[in-house]
Length: 462
Image (cartoon, rainbow, N blue to C red; front, side, top):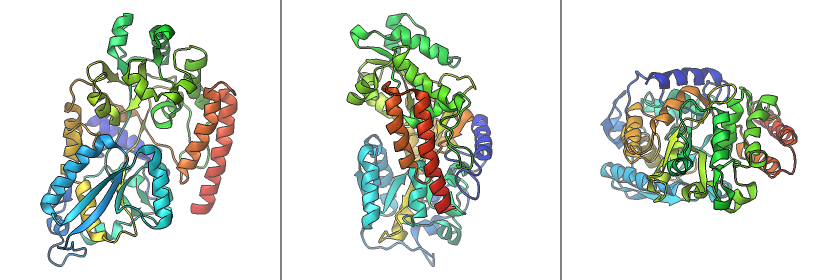
């Protein structure tokens, strides 16, 4: 995939100082189109170094796995991914029948609060999902099991992982997690509503102007139909348009907040104008009462920016399964941009079964696990081969656009106290989305609040 390789080269250069002292990015995809793919776990060598004995803990290996029955907790937030996670566990148990994996699904709106409480109480799950927003906080506060020594002692190959995404979960040369997936953002649209309005479907040539004009044409207040859902969402919405306008959220070394930059404000105004100027979006109050995705799934919203991970939700929804499709995000004044991110699986430092958790972590990072995620359509895996499986998993949707969009990907901007920064963004921008203050005033307040967090982070952790 030439586009993918190009993206990674750009990505590594742009975010070399943003995520670790060794260079890297906030997120990414499968690096190095020509490198060996495959993983080295589960007793099968699928590329790179032969790790079959290490995976089984056989012989004089440094991290042997017990023959006794143990139970590990594996925590994540997406119930849509639970079937695929269970399939991965089933495959793992063919190799390690004595290591029982207890799947724990905690909804997104409770996940981080619960995780923080567990960290404080010393009861973190053995293995769990983490994202860029929260990773550095947990790693720098000694909550995650370091992996570098295990990787080196077992001669375990990480060449199959995308390097920029691997670097995202690295600090000062220490590895803390293995990439699970990669995601980008697309423009989802309701074909039936476009047909009823006599409009052509969105395509790769669309600009913001096309989005606005079609959103206005699709809006019918009497039928409670709006052309676009201009809700407050960092990753799926305004982070993308800020960069499409030529602005920025954080600078490269995470020392300056860019929300008040005039170009950043232009990217923010696309959403507030959709509500208050063009009247083509539900109000912030309406989107608080009813989640925008639910509106999209019921035919009340014709278009929505959303991530690759939600294709399985729209595929399985009776209304959207045959009525919607997806295309590239519209181009902004500065061109194309999409936020790229990817989750990692990590091990709690205080796990009582570090070797068994290490064995499961390696399997979660294996090519077979990526294939399961791909062929089930669960998420876009960070392997070239598994990416194609994901694209083919649902021919009803144009999923290839999510892979293509990696070419103009922008790494997820975050800092150590990422959740705190995002709360400031949401709290203040909600006032602008509601029309209580101007977007310019809100952007200045957000920039000042996030800047204070950056200054605090840089003083404490650098």
